[in-house]
Image (spheres, rainbow, N blue to C red):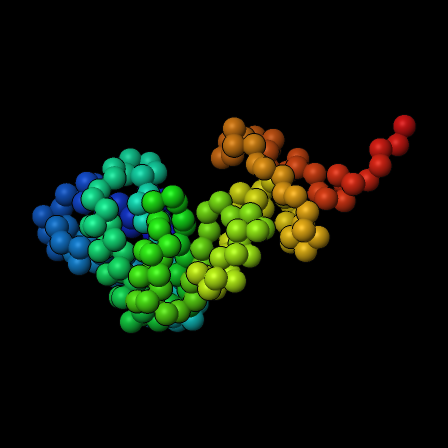
Length: 191
């Protein structure tokens, strides 16, 4: 379930966007009601073992306006505790610089299920996060776009190609299917 990156479920969490006066607005519990209701409905329909949620604390993507750090933390700690009760298979957190290691530890203490972190990892930082038990899984998004053979590159401890951010999320195929594989990069050119 996508509850991140400025989409509807995250908009309900944000008090600067959600100005409702009914039981879906106001308090953290009320602003969380839609997201938790969706998660609960999905778990009932397909099972908690097939249900996961992506969140992005401190996100300001789209039209999301930043709100007080304490309220952000309280909101996401409340969600972590409620998601623990629902028993979803994993919680996916899209990291950004405002998410501190301490805040992640606080979430981890409340949500004991599988934790997946994404957001700017390279091979070394992913390995470090796993070894420090900050997470159970590390995900790669943009790196899969610019490294079609990302798994092979990680296994070979090869340098990753940095994505061309000017070509992401455009209507063109440039920047999506034209990145070379490791094999293509290391093949000698013939004249």
